[in-house]
Image (cartoon, rainbow, N blue to C red; front, side, top):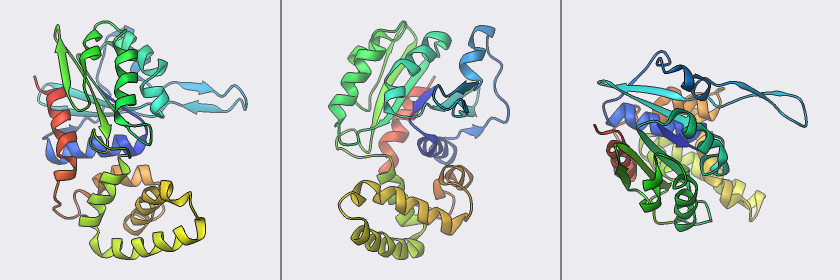
Length: 248
């Protein structure tokens, strides 16, 4: 199981596994023990303020040989490194757990510390206390690890890696998109830098699959990895992390 923040991260992780690691899509949800069902099947929640029905974010299921990989977005860093993830793991206790979060401007060290504190309290994942960014640890047949975007060293997000991929696979389109982003920066002011990569990805996506949401488009296009052969080196560490986590 890989726990990530949102649908864009889910699409990126699943697309990398499908394109470069030999995984295939699993068309149906795997049959699990009865005690695990409520942890796997999304159930509606009711917003306390508005009364609106909110569905948990859907996971993706992949298959390679006899192994099944679930990529589950939880909504944000607070959920992935907080009580939401803890409740999930207490209920289903998968053999391997990977946590993928953005460093943002908080820094890699703070993410790793939060990971150790949260998951180090859980059985059978107490080995999380020894984890370092980008490394999978194993004790008693259970693996766990954390990978912090963009590279386990610097502040930033997964979007930076996707922009690098788009620069290669959508070269002609990206030259125009970059001009657009620069123009928007002049209008939007100082806050634009934090939104620049997301805006670039959204604009590229509309040029490839107009009308769909960015999350849906990334899923359908496999993050544009299928468009043109690209240098996968920006994702090399993430691919290695996924492989270490899922290797028999």
